[in-house]
Amino acid sequence: MARLFLRADLDELAAYRQGGGPQPGDTATFKLSSNENPFDPLPSVQARVAEALAGFNRYPDTGGRALAERIGARYAVRPTQVALGAGSVEIISQLIRATAGAGDEIVFPWRSFEAYPLLTIAAGARPVMVPLTPQFRHDFAAMRGAVTDRTRLIIVCSPNNPTGTSVAARELEKFLSSVPPRIVVVIDEAYLQFNRDPDAAVGREFLGLYPSVSSCIPSPKPTDWPGCGSGTRWRRSLWYRPCGRCRCRSRLPTLPRSPESRPLMRRLSSPNGSRCS
Image (cartoon, rainbow, N blue to C red; front, side, top):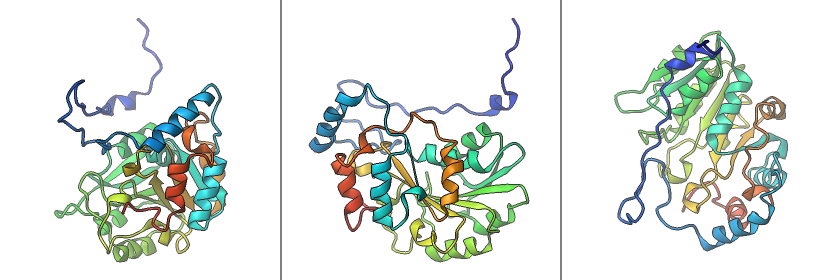
């Protein structure tokens, strides 16, 4: 049988293995690996899902204009500086594919989110995995030392997944000031809502200071909307088009696309919309 023309380097990738959940009828076991809410969805969420079923025979608004406008108003950025996707993984994938290709390098801490090396290799780039410190924190000195002329993107994960350690604002500022401005730095804040460290960095506070920085935050996990949408606010609107061209046109979820998505919209309009009280 003839061998198909498939990329040989993908053979080195370990397949993603989803953790097993409780079996039918098991009401005492909860799956913690995916940070799923063990309780039933809020009635308001269930009602919105039922309402949206009437339009499931139509493609969603791939740009998520209404949601982008609300996020832009909440964080004082233009809607064109907001990217939406099916969870933070897709947003980071867009950034990687928009910045790196064959022979390029992506720098990130390790261990960290297991999707980082998979997304990097899938894009044809090389992952540069910098070990954490003995305290399971980012080793920013080592990460800065790993930057070469082939580096195209640096990922900072705070709180870090899976160690739970946060990046302090002062150490992030010191690191960003040392990174060449041509290199994009994405701050992955997928678990920002669970962060209670008063010294932790908040990505959006660095957007105006460093034009190459982006902040990636998914819809709040504790509010029954995991994976429904993710917003990345960019300092420069010129990033919008390259990343938009890397977006799958039909992946943006339908539910939060209009102002009628009230639970998520109320969340964005609240004074502490980016954190869970």
